[in-house]
Length: 180
Image (cartoon, rainbow, N blue to C red; front, side, top):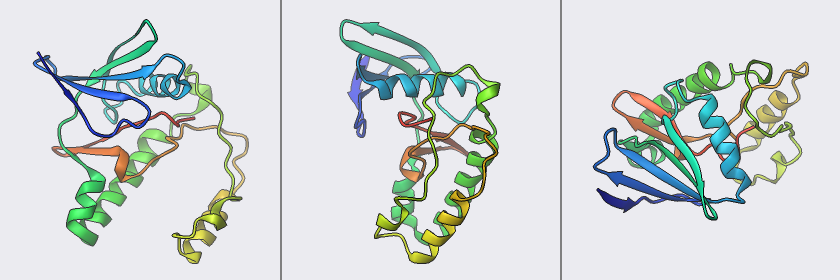
């Protein structure tokens, strides 16, 4: 077996385990990393959804937490956006919206046993986002002001093309550390 360190992994170390069947990665966190526990809960909840890599095992050894999951070969959606421009961007963002609406936001807290933090929506920080056009800020505020009737649904917490891998004709949502 050959072990290759992958890029990214701001809250963890991610290693590709070449020679495994299926090919897998190991995400390694410090055992006290609460974001790791959140990611594990979200991935277990979504394990058979087809929108996340499949988790095979989670275990602790000394001060480290290991998550063994499928390796998803392909290209990061953000890299594709950076290379291919506007037409490709429309397709990617359309697919991101479909996955979010169909496969993530349909999971309600009452329907699952996952131990995930409760996140509250707020438009308070929208004005501080200098790079966001004012028209978009207005739309965000309008959406965030819609009453949720007390219903809680799964959210990713850092959803965007930078956390999506495109593989063949599929998309896989990665990095669930900030889910709720």
